[in-house]
Length: 230
Ligand SMILES: Nc1ncnc2c1ncn2[C@@H]1O[C@H](COP(=O)(O)OP(=O)(O)OP(=O)(O)O)[C@@H](O)[C@H]1O
Image (tube, rainbow, N blue to C red; front, side, top):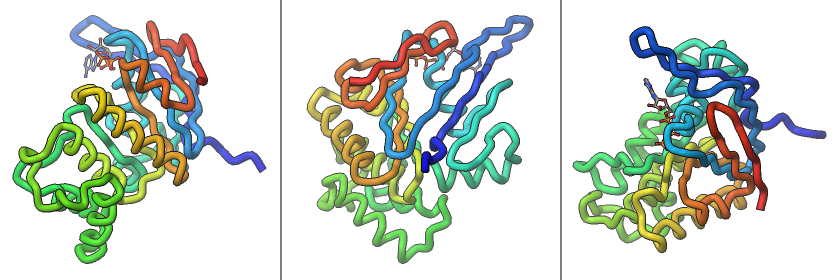
């Protein structure tokens, strides 16, 4: 039996309007992502990579086309359904980690679980387990400012993954890291897709990062211009 892809984008169009001016950012983007796949999205600055990620994550909406992800039709779903989709199905990882500075590593991961509706006892156990998985079992009580950039990004990955999402969306997850820390973060994301059914879509400018992916999708002038597999 051939299973349905986790994400299906069909002829997706997105334009931004500023006053009278309309800028078409995505102009007929078609793309599918399978469960357990790691897909890198590359392309020149301003080509719409973040916009594409935001549409898949229901942080923004397409103007036309079809967008289905994790069993949800994002073009038809109401706000409540979209909020539940973001909270349960998607793990977000950002370039600048977006950790809460006044919370410890453990509390940051637990905060992500609270949003997903996980009870306090379960959340504590799961958060500790996730921090252990990313190699930070000794850093649970540390605040973000006491951690390196790479460690902070690993906390952010633990936070994004603790709720058990089907899909992780990562915008330049290694963009602020040195080569070694970046390689470790990529190794973590790679292992995750190998050990579980989680899919990862990440935006990157770095060819070393996209080399780790199952597929690299290049966006240019609103279109997918190339798809490469290593
Ligand atoms: N909310 C918005 N309103 C108006 N224009 C926007 C908005 N968001 C993005 N844009 C414009 O859409 C285009 C695509 O932006 P996007 O952030 O998706 O590109 P990107 O490929 O991720 O760029 P970069 O690699 O520089 O991060 C840019 O020209 C940007 O200025």
